[in-house]
Image: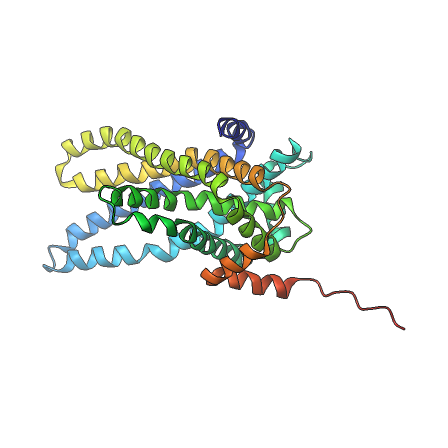
Length: 317
């Protein structure tokens, strides 16, 4: 694992244009998010003078209003950007450099659009892969249920599941990386094979995933503490805004983690997955097991079958 993490750090540094772009987008989003809630707070304060329930109504509307815009930002900017970053990481991991004449971001975006054709295909593939990974992890964790009756182990099992949930985001990106490694396969065939190979190499891949899950939790906790120091000082000066300042500290801690920690974690997971599944062949038995517990995987199978090229017609006799 240490060598994988070191290689990931070196590749992450090579993809600094993506890291900086992600940082800019996340911090802009965090700033606008905080500004939005400042405006909501001020409007709520003003509305409180009109009616006793007016402030509550303002906050309810404010909670519901941002969701479509956040989803749009997440899908039409971050998904494509993240997957373009994955394409560049795979290229650097296997070839050491990119073709000359184009920027990293432009090259990665072109690879994504050439591979997935439409962003809707990318989003659907990502959602189905994520859903299947959850089912695979559930299948693998089924043995942990044996320990629920043992005193003292229930909390450990629960903590392990929390870590696995945090690890999921890095695993789905690793599986999606196969799309840029095996360009001769269709998107859906690549996703199907990639998921089967993940199930076959679950233990090896999970070691890195669990480490990254724990590191993600710890990094967020440390960042939250660091941000809370100045924001709580501001809260002391403006007590009425105390809850907002605390929320801002948590938001910027998350933004910093997404911008700086996640690119390295994603790269580490991709390398661990590629190393664990290199030269491995998918096992039909594992495919049947996954299909038995995961509806998203069955959808991937159907799409892979529909997208498969038709067999050549037999020669005329």
